[in-house]
Amino acid sequence: MAGALSAAVLAAVLGAGPGRRILAAVAEAPASLGAAVAGVASVVAAFLVRRAWAALDRIPARRILASSTRTARVTSAATTLDPGMLTWVAEDAHWRGRALRSRPWPRLVSRLGAAPALAWQEWLRVGRRPGRLAALLGAAALPAVCANATGGGSGPAAGMLLCGALTAAAMCTGGVRRDGGDPALARMLAVDGRAVTAARAVLPTLLAASWSALALVVLQAASTLPAGAWWALGPAAAPALAAGALRMARRRPVDHSMPVIDTPGGAVPTGPLIWLATGVDLALLGSLPALAALASRPASVAPYVAAQAVVGAAVLAAYVLRSARRVGGQGLSRSRRTVGQTASRRARLP
Image (tube, rainbow, N blue to C red; front, side, top):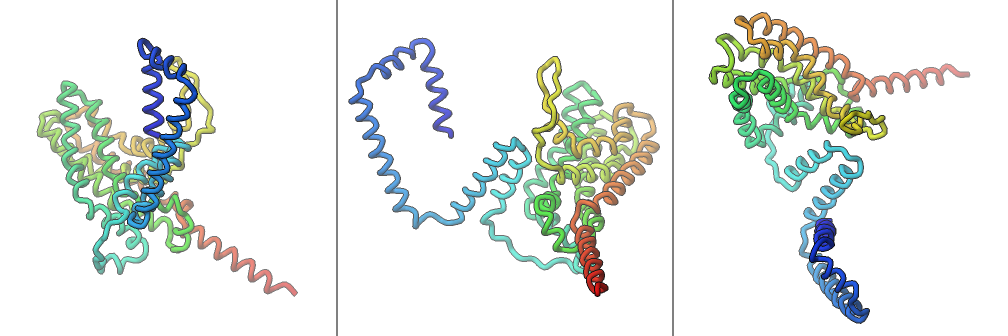
């Protein structure tokens, strides 16, 4: 693909100005010269195929499988125009072929039941990539940098704070995405959907709370916010941000069959817009008290913290209660009841 693109760009460059003479000379070349070039190209191609065939025994199978999987992911992302597939490429490329040490699970996780055990994989995945955690902590200074760059403006800083906290929460939702991509596995586990969602919301809530609290402390240290317990807005808004991150992880691929909106700036497809807004809308709705406090900068932030704590907890609770329809435990229990009812009806038949 890169070679074809380079050839197309080269042809476009040569087709303008003095390059036309070169193209005209090539077009007027005798047929014998073209046959000779084709023969040389065939010999070179046969030589490269022979070298590849001879080196086939020395190529590790894991590289071929990794290239095949990566190509399939990229092709699927290109054909469906789904940017979410690109994150799968990066995630699979990182973990494929790595030898991970086996570690015993904490006894507390084993005693709590199946739902915390399913969520524990996210804790292990985050702990095995300390570089991402370090980069995440370093990015907590971005809202303060944005506020200083805009002359102390509250709008860009609040937007950067919301984006950073939502990114921190979405960093540990890989298990939720895999359940959405393979719902049969979730049904086979026979675990209640609400319990699984609640257990998997703990880590995103903690990461979002830590990152946003640290970012607010840096903002206050940079004299952007007045005195007060502004850091408490982060933990108060963390449940709503976790609900938004879980909703982002469960969103479906982009629906390109949706209508297109005609605007003065051109046609805007609604499918990608809805895909981008899924999850962000829930996080934005649940963080309205915190955003209002950052925009108005009141003398006392305590009422906003209380309102944000209530709204954030309500948003996460509503999302957990609604998630029972989307996780496999309830579906499995329904199927068991249906099978039992059918068997009892057949038993009563004469």
